[in-house]
Image 1 (cartoon, rainbow over the protein chains, first blue to last red):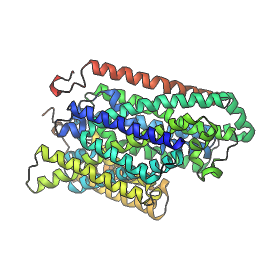
Image 2 (image 1 turned 180 degrees about the vertical axis):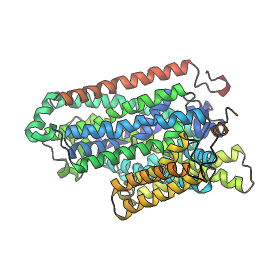
Image 3 (image 1 turned 45 degrees about the vertical axis):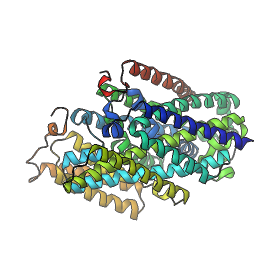
Image 4 (image 1 turned 60 degrees about the horizontal axis):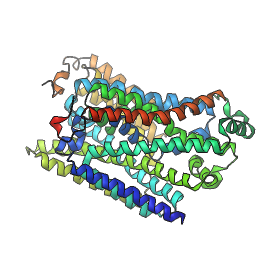
Length: 485
Length: 44
């Protein structure tokens, strides 16, 4: 009976999404390639803020937060959350502002690198460093959706992965970025309401905040004291850098703020985006706090310390399980669609268009749109294949930050500083990435890998830009802006 | 206890205020004509 309800809810969800897609298609939001890839640079702050948050928070977010809050003491976790995660999210404005002013009609990172440095190796490396994390996020989210879906609903992993992969591929192929921002907005409104309902019900069910506090004090008296240790500070630095790199070097974040219709709208998006993370994280850490106060052994139940949001559901009314399934589903789906269209625009602008140009072929917008759609279907199907075959993703996922940190200095300096040109950027990025890769992949030290990679690439780029023969030519930002031209 | 109260209180407040604020902003954007289907009619 319970499984039947889950099946009905899932089918209803898919039906509503398809109906919405049909309605959007009838209203003809997508008329040309720019509408498809970047929503015609015409979106307002509410849609961008919600889309950035929706793309940012994925099927892992609540469980990672549940894990961090279980591993560390509460004040330590709050430091990680506020300084390690939320602060770098707002720092993204520092890369968004100059780009908005100098490069208001762009298609994201690879397009920026291409116009800024005019270098094939840099553009290609930028493409690789963006497409790998995007693809990892797509198939890992599909797999996680299947795994948690099975744990929650009892429906088999294969069915869940296939059903929702097909749904996302269909609406991304039809509507591109317009559909993604609209559906993400609607889905995340429901997510926020669900989070509020979940927190209120759960807190009242387990004796309120004071009840939880006293329960934890009895079980673990040291939980509310700050503990300073070297691994903690190292993790804080790694987390901060990974998240900062995530904002500075993720295609979907760039597409988000570049598709804003004005700087004012972009500012609204950035100022609300980091605040929205707190309720999402709360779903994880409040569940862990409750499990602790009730002496529920999460590791014994599922084997993973971050599974508290799932484990506490058996002590709660059944309808909360449905709510949790919808929340996990929305987290996964909103990330999947955002990353799918982002990968499509990356490939179209970063690979197909330059190849056609180098061969002297002028692609018509209609053909480019067809290619973008084929890319969405191809990447979507490949990710589904990976997810269904459960190709080990956890090891790869930890490497997600490596790629983004690698191009962070190029993006950051390139957006602000006219002195840095092609060769300093190329040498700085190559040396920094090689040293970082040695520490990261060979020695397995992510702290030294990230910090050395950033220090060397930033340092070399700045140093070389002051030295002859690289200090002669300055970059003219005016030539990037198609509007001013 | 104070930290717990502040964090959970803030979270609850945000989870209620955020959707209202977003909806408010979205409705004002629709009223300004940002999302008219014909691109040339979209308001500034």
